[in-house]
Length: 301
Image 1 (spheres, rainbow, N blue to C red):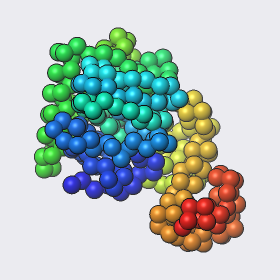
Image 2 (image 1 turned 180 degrees about the vertical axis):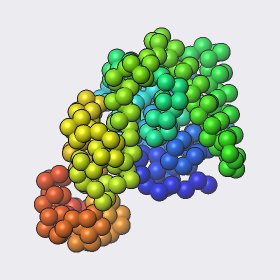
Image 3 (image 1 turned 90 degrees about the horizontal axis):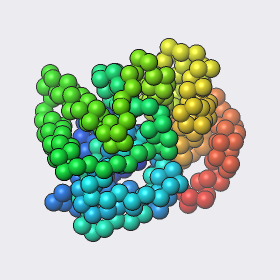
Image 4 (image 1 turned 60 degrees about the horizontal axis):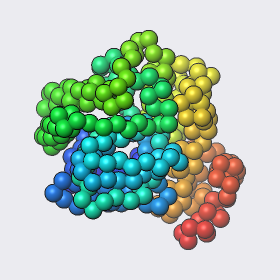
């Protein structure tokens, strides 16, 4: 079985969620063909915020979702594509549903966009997702891509493994343009694709460094851009500036330490690089609206 370290806000990193095949922290593949539903643990009433680009192919049956407050039904022959940072809540499904799910992490997605020099116009994803239908021929193509990717993920490491994976995913991204009949836009001329790349790399850096680094300047320096431009891109893409994202990530880490890891507020402050426990307490209450001590009490820790 594959094992994953918990990536911040990674809805797919739960201990009970086992992909059908995977390259950890880069690509996850799920299907329920001939098996139980591997995504059942995601069907919580609160929903999940996904940090990935996902392709959900419905081969038969139907599934009902609420995505960014909009309720939709994905039926057999349909595909659902969600952008990173999309709120997804499972509502219901038919018993006979069969699906394929591709989950591409931001860092790998950024590499593939550069690899094929293509992206989508922002209007294609004006709600954070798009849906479309596939012909039988198209669905067969995606099943083949899924099958080949699954084989590659399960193979032992070899020199050209990631090249093969990127080629299959490139085919997936290029062919998915037909979902809403829009042509791809060159990444060299599309400002949104450059912003998307910056945003995705920023999210990846937060996953790696949020426990130690809390300044916008640090992340901007890592990306080779100004702090002002980083905040602009974050706001354009998610309606939150870079500082708000950093605070959210740090607060999430703090909740995990206070809760699942049973650390004291003092230990948590030290782990998160706060100069004093009081400064951590002030930060936590400002961001979450509750003190660390009360958070522990509320959650019966």
